[in-house]
Length: 216
Ligand code: HEM
Image 1 (cartoon, protein in one colour):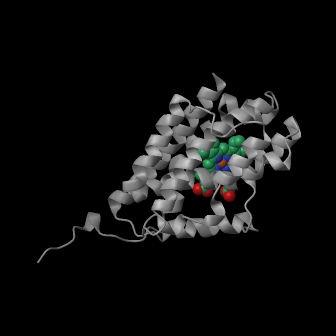
Image 2: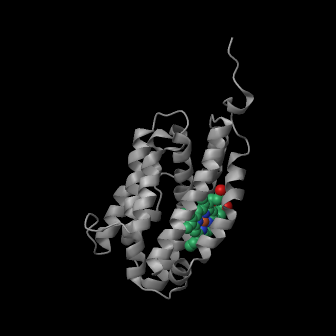
Image 3: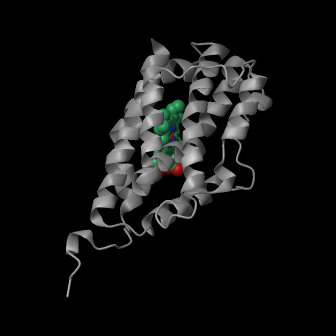
């Protein structure tokens, strides 16, 4: 008879959402205080600052949503995948409204690495969850502040900022609470739970690198 070693047994992780928040808290502070983010949010840049960021995020979300589509029925990644979160059509329309051709941009080196990291999760659903959490929970949180500041400081219009609008989700806080409950209910073994945390920290680092490249 074979026995499952304790360490690899699959279980739900009632602490995962808290662990994720705790593990990324320092990186979150750093991201919020990154020069590019601080300048953008304080009105020290111009509309082209936001435009350059949005063009780069287009690569990130294309990867995220292509892999998400592939993993939609996966028992680990599937529960977080939600059509209401899909951003690519919105981001693409925003870029056009901002005067850009979505398909003409080139990824910055750090963004190419970020995209490669997301694509590598196609065979590692736990790590995909980390990338999903880092971007979408951010968009549902700080993203809402970004939207209002871009309107205030740079006169961007609703038509240019549909990326931050989530049709079908009326109460963002309630959605985020439910998302955290979903995270806590994912069937993960110990190694996968650790991988989610490690990859979320790495995902924040990718975002920090993006901001550093945008500031350069
Ligand atoms: C303009 C800069 C930012 C501001 C003002 C901001 C603001 C916030 C706020 C207020 C929350 C708490 C929301 C809540 O508890 O429901 C939050 C959560 C979060 N933010 Fe940010 N944020 C910023 C940048 C970022 C960046 C760059 C990322 C990563 C790409 C990010 C990812 C997250 C995530 C994943 C959460 C959820 C934390 C959790 O509850 O587990 N944020 N943000």
